Length: 135
Image 1 (cartoon, one colour):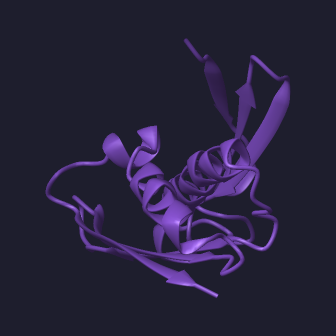
Image 2 (cartoon, rainbow, N blue to C red):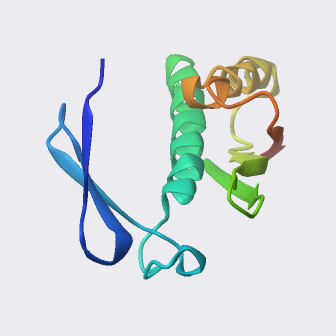
């Protein structure tokens, strides 16, 4: 189990300590919520977590096959609803993966993209797409 402790700083900035590694992560409320908007918002970190998770599981699959995955990137776009019950409504993910991976190894890596625990934890109501390009 992972433990994260979050405290409130000035101007709606939060500081979260990831206890297992002793690292701090800071966020700002967006300007529309009265924050400074100088740092990623908590909503932004959902996209960060999703992109990092997808890339990690794909890289593990590539590594098992002995493939260089260092040029792989994941782009995440999110849309939010507004109002008192604001939430993420849409997430679009683009996986740009190295064309140097042989065609017969690609299906296993593409399947791995869908095994990310963060993505599997998102609400079913969120409109999610994951597209892959081999570049």
